[in-house]
Image 1: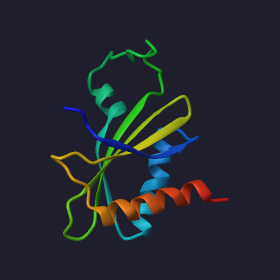
Image 2: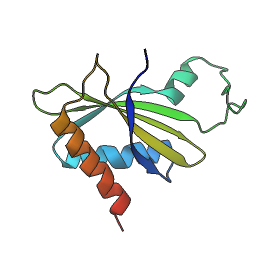
Image 3: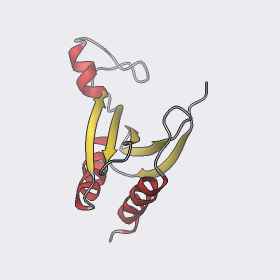
Image 4: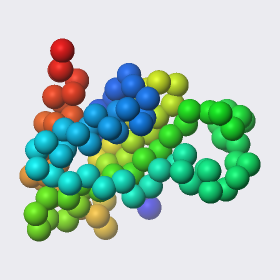
Length: 118
């Protein structure tokens, strides 16, 4: 089955910094972001686990999964993928995990505000 991810935002920031900035915007809007996966933390638990893409233990590849909660709606899943000083955020919206349209609109607006900030 193909997953349906919609690109939300691309930032010229490290993944950790981009996630921090978007999470801050999300919290300021009264929503709750929760990190449920962090690739670098998972890699540390494995000991010697070189990056298959770059082949070094010092690579900057990062993958973070955030759940965004609001009131009594289902959480929205955001995936942040970063390397080489860039980060791409995607929204997950699949038949098994439908994204709430109002929450999607809110998070898209917040993400857009990051790209227009001076």
